Length: 266
Length: 305
Image (tube, rainbow over all chains, first blue to last red; front, side, top):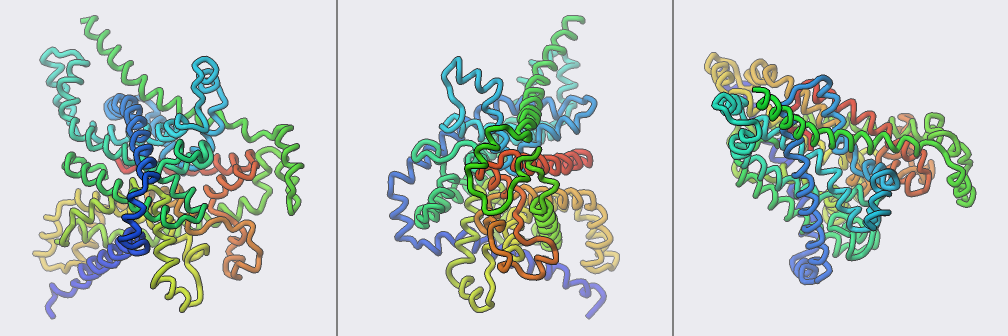
């Protein structure tokens, strides 16, 4: 045994730990399939109750993703480019809804919707935001807006400010620079972040527990329906719906990796 | 010239307004609920109607009198100790894993990356259900029967497992990004000069990656603190369980009849103890705010979920 092979235990340890952890995680994710079996999985997948919930999840996540993007892209650009005093404190407060547990955010939303802008909206426009699908959208928006701003900040950070400086020196206005230089360069990052934000919105359910509650067919988006059916003891529905959620998450992240090859946010 | 400055000002104001909207929304969301801590007459009346098994007069004080309640201190103790254990395990297992995924040739590495990234957008309820199905059915259930103790609905293996799943995934991705950013060339030079693989890692890569490793530790701890669904599904609540259900060790550590803090927020608000629940929620917001501020200060980039 010569000197150079003496530290060989280190790569062996690394690869061994990786293998064990991968085995545990893959067992964790596939345990639903193993438990349910192929025949029962196909039975639950053929039920319309499953697909109604699936489409509810898809459309609510899409709507809240659009609102988050509208706010998140400019906010992410501002956080990425502008320097102002106390910006770390400012950014930390923006990040608060995503760092604390979403159940806590649900409790706070439960308190806020009886207050100023929300009571006004329900009185003058008749849109009640609470125990209906608008509540679902508000929860998803609250959690994903800050998340989206973070992702956008990361993708704008990857673009050197040099290009903007060149564009300014050639006489372009700031808005022209933004639309003609910055946005096209950030396009891949924005699409990748969009997919992640969509998947995060579709995964949100903790806030719904305190704030929205359950209405069959109206507010039970898929992750929340898992909780409800688990309380109802319907293990077949629970496991088949978790299979759908796992497939949604994995396909969204695969699409993100394929599109935004360079997006190293994760 | 002045027109150009004017357009720059409008441009900046436009972008600032969106960031400002997010800031105000978040600040309003948290600060406007401070009045939930004050007990109203209606809350006292409702609480009289509810039949409490024990003396809960303490709940009619400001913020549910949470600082006088041993349940609060026990829960905080429980959560902090379990998250610290989780972070320690995640660090010990995560750094070798991240190093292996970053440096060595592993078949299907891109699939592994997609898999670990997808854990971050997987619903917490799915993680909880997967844990329940994995441990409470099949061979692992038989193994637990053989060993004579249960993983689910227990503090010591159960809560650590439930908070470890996502904490590990987040920390690991941060450490992997850190090791990716360290040039492997330095290590190759050290190896060519005769140091072995472990020494090359210990003296070259580890010191270069130190700040990123610290960031990953803070991230893993914050994610463990933010855990809710996996703990709710896999462990549930412990408050109403009889004292005989807890071992002497948990009693010694002051962890008996206590809950995970975010689960306690949910349980208290559901019971109607709004003031108490919001007091716990503000404690969590305070802890989360400090950790995210530290993360911003030391320059953690895009690693918040």
